[in-house]
Structures are given as structure tokens and as C-alpha cells.
Length: 428
Image 1: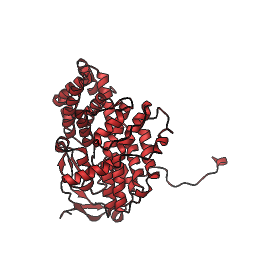
Image 2: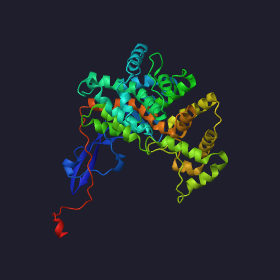
Image 3: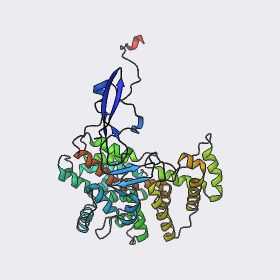
Image 4: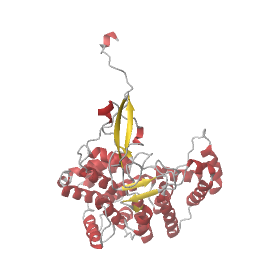
């Protein structure tokens, strides 16, 4: 708590409101007593100026292009760590020792199987069902299969549910893909890493064994790290809001998946890839740049700018190098990547983009990488959900453990009709 107060005068009455300090970042005015003191609420569509919770997980400085997980820069984690290590960090607050990491990996590995009856659940969907629709349904249904980890007041059950969600999400995602292409489900293997296991379950077929390429495994692991958590975004806030009612963890994560499905949130990398494909070749870039600058043209450059970052997205730097490594390893000479590289250079040097702070973001390159590996575009958001599950779970656990936590109940500025009397239908 800061020594300073914020003073608000309403109708001649003056009240002081405490100013709170975080460990880093802007100060926050505590307005919890605002309605009691003044009979007024704040009006903040999108909650862009409202701190909905206290959290020690992730910090973003959008102006400086900083993203920290428990204090560690995202670039260092992506280059030097592993996704399993980042999962442990987000869940437990500190990086693990060798023994702690080995035990954690063993626990997650032993939870990767899903209940066999879930295969029947999958077959209830139409063959052409979107994989995200399947993910929403299957993750929500997990509470019907794992009754022993739905008591949110039991720390052990919360821990078990957290491990199950992180472990089973790759299996669920791979099964959604297999179902969509009409191939048999592939069971997980305990001798493979988390990411290698997912790639094998996705691309292996009974006719021949799939041996995950280390370069592709490393690229996917980095993608998972870069998407693991991102502070109080729409889907994370959805998980917290659902959890504030006391809903079981599987229902809360299913709610997060549903929110992520929105094109303004999880579908941005697909939109960026489609844009690059629409441009097609480097020589057409000037035409599309001109269209992007034209306010009367509906065309928009996707993969540039960010709701939070007003500087270069720190995740995009890692993603650019990863894209280069993947395309070189696979021998892909993709004109889409040439367009992406040229477009990035133009955006970083063009006064129009600099003035509007439209820097490339993580979605700009991730779609190119995933497409090169072999994922169809409808799987992109599924992969995002897979990676973000650990962030959702860590945020949910933090919320449940917070003594200040209350059920979410935003207020509104009502602009509808005032009270009026009912008139029977024959008199209207």
C-alpha cells in the first residue's frame, strides 16, 4: 500500500481512496468503497483501466515490450528453458531443481491417457465439426469422468486436476485432429517428451511409426512457452470469472477455450497467415501496404500491433528465428515466409507503422510455422488452447487461494426504459 491517497470530490463531499503498489508497474487506486461512499460506479468498457485481481504470475509492460513469467523474461525462457519447466514455474512460483523437474515430468506423463469412454464421446460429433467445438465439449465433459478432482476446496484435488488438465490437453487436441481427418486415435507413449508425444499422437498412423524431428519438437516447445500465459486477457479473465462462482476446474477451462475461439483472440494467427497468402508474393506488398493505409479500404494488415504491446512483441523475436529454423529443416521454400520477412522490414521502417506502433506480433510468424509443420489452419487455435492451459490453471489456482476473491459481478451503466406499467395485449 502506498503512502499516497487519491482524492475524489463528488457533490461537495470529498473521500480519499488508497493507492496500491505492485512489485512493478503502475500504481492502482483502490475503489472498492466507491459505491458505498458515493453511490457511483466507474465506467470502463473492456476493463482496460481496471485491475480485476491481484496476481504474481505474469507481468507485461506494453510500452517497453516486456513479458515476464514469475519475473523471468519470456525470451530467456523460450531460448533456454522447456515447456515443462515453464509449467512448473507458473504453477509453483519458482524454477524447479533437477529432481523436482523430473518428478513433475513423470507426474504429467502418467496422466496423459484419457478415459477410454471419451472415444465414444468424440464419435458423437459430426465428422466435419471444428476441432475447437470438440475441445470445448470434451474438456467440459472431463468433470463427468474425474469426480475425484472437482472439489475446489481441497488443495490436493486442485493439484491433481491441474496436472490432469495439462497432461491430457495434448491427447485431447491430437484426438480432435485425428477425428477430423478420419484417422484412428493414437495413444500417448511414456518414453517421449510432452511435445514429442503430442506430435506423434497427431501425425503418427498405424501403418508406420512417426519419429518426431528434434528441430520441430524444439519449435513446438517454444511455441507452447510463448503462449503459456499472458496476464489478464479475455480467456484468462473468463476462466477466473467462471471459477469465482465455484465451478469445477474442467468447466472453467472449457469456458476459457470457448472464449479463446473468438477470432479477435485466439484466431489471430490464422488471420495473419491468410493475409500473407492473400498477398502471395513480395512484389505485391506495396499494393497491400497502400491499401492498409487507406481508411476507405476494408483491408487490414493482420499480425501487426497488439492490444497491450505498444512496442515490438518480445515473443515475435523468438518466433521469427524459429520460423527460419523450421523452414530450413523442412526444406520449405515458402513465398509466404518471404512475404512475411519483407513485410516485417517495411513495417519496422515505414513512418506510418512506426507512428501507429504497428509492430509484428507473435501471431505474425506462428501461423507460418504451424502450417509448415503440417497443421491445418483450424488446428491453430487448438494449439493455442493446449499451450495456454497451464496459464489458465495457474491463474485459477491463484484465484481460489486468494482470500480477497469474490464472485465476479461487474456493474453496468443502464440506458434502457425507466419503470413503466404493463398494458394488456388488447389495449396496445
